[in-house]
Amino acid sequence: MKMYRAAAYMRLSVAGRSETESESIANQEYCIRRFVDEQPDIEIVSCRIDDGYSGLIFQRPSFCAMLQDATDGQINCIIVRDLSRFGREFVETGRYLRNILPAYGIRFIAISDGIDTNRISAKDDLLMQIKSAINDEFSRDISMKTRRALSTMRKNGLYVGACPVYGYLKSNEDKHQLVIDEYAANIVRDIFEMKISGASAAVIAKELNDRNVLSPLEYKKSKGLPYSKNGFTDKSNSRWSASTIIRILKDETYIGTLVQGKQYSINYKVKKQVTKPVDEWVQMEMSHEAIVPYYDFQTIQRLMLLDTRISSGMGKVNLFSGLLICDYCDAGMTRKTTARSGKRYHYYYCCAGKKNGCHSPAFIEEGALEAHVFKGIESYIKEVESLVRRSSQMNKDEVNQELTSGITAQIKKLQNDLDEAQFFTSKLRTTLLNGIISEEDYAWMKADYAAKIFSLKNEIDLLVRETQTIIMRREERVQWLFNISEFAEATTFDRAMIVRLVKNICVRSKNNIVVDFVYAIE
Image 1 (tube, one colour):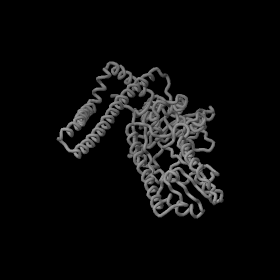
Image 2: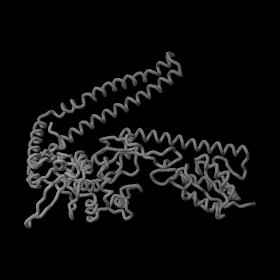
Image 3: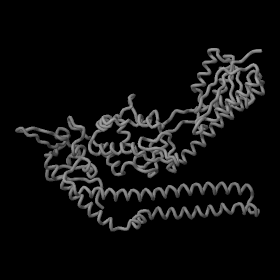
């Protein structure tokens, strides 16, 4: 009697895993060992387990190791609980069972499906093909349902990722909701504040490294948190870098906005990710608590588009860097330093100059510029203080109602339509039992009303979220006004204050300077 040296192969996909150990793996092994106990010509010489791997791919660690055992002659039999554990992809599974395994003289047994290649008949071969095709179709169906479910959750503002960005954690109560990780969030706030104060991304990274602050990747590793291989790290030593800082500064997650669905796989068999056009990304505001104020985030996005130069030997940009514009040609203006009689003088001049088409290049001494700009800022802050006083006298609820009145009317109409659809749905069964409609009409009308109800609920949810966003943005604007009014007590002006207030400064001459503020006083 020929003896078979068997490999017991167990597999479980990610979707089938539990929070602790995978019970299905233990069940598969129990089933295989129980079967082998009744087979005098088979002994198990190895157990191969791929826990967390899809059956659609065959580049699995233990699967490949098992094939190497077959190549080396260490095994001549493979046993699985059922065919789907071996593989779900129809074509590739058939190639292994028909060509590869027979070439190495490997006996294949799928216990639950009654497949044993030592005893296979034409009928059994057809059955094996049918089961393999069913397993393939099952994977396709699961893939489509998963895609639809994920799409719906994204549109409802639910987090569906595996690894939250630095500064956030998954809520213990709801894994689809992000909550703030206070330690990391404070680091993120420091990064934004340093940027607003004029520090470059490279200087911010150096500061964090000098303070021995763990990079996002190392921090997640130290806390046992999930992390992505393509996360906030771009160097092998996982230290803070300029590119890491820039990614954080551009991430809308920090203002409470979820941006998901940026990539997709072509189909359920191809795992390679393809990036979608930006207009197809799913963006939901106010999905979670913000770490960074909305207006500070917008200020930094504006700053990152400016041409800002770092002073020689300094880690911060100049006070007006990137803000000055020549009124004659719209070119930027550059700071220049000269020395006369042992004194240093600073001035700004048009970058273009007459040689590059500017007929009357702007030129201004730094002291004159500062005096004019600071006077304009003082006047602006006084107007803000006046607006704050007027705002404090307004009824907050009345203002919010006025801002959202149009959307509220839409919600009311949709709610009436929803109530009507739900009412008719509740009467359908009675209508059927009374013989007014047929079974076919009942099934069709029930499905139609269900789809309508689902659509109306989604529309209402989106409008409610839009209402909340409008109110939140107004409250943020009011808070911004209060914050700006606090500058009234300032005796000096720094970079952080100027970039929060000023959009650009248009210079024609020392007596003709126009300061364009970020937000006009309304």
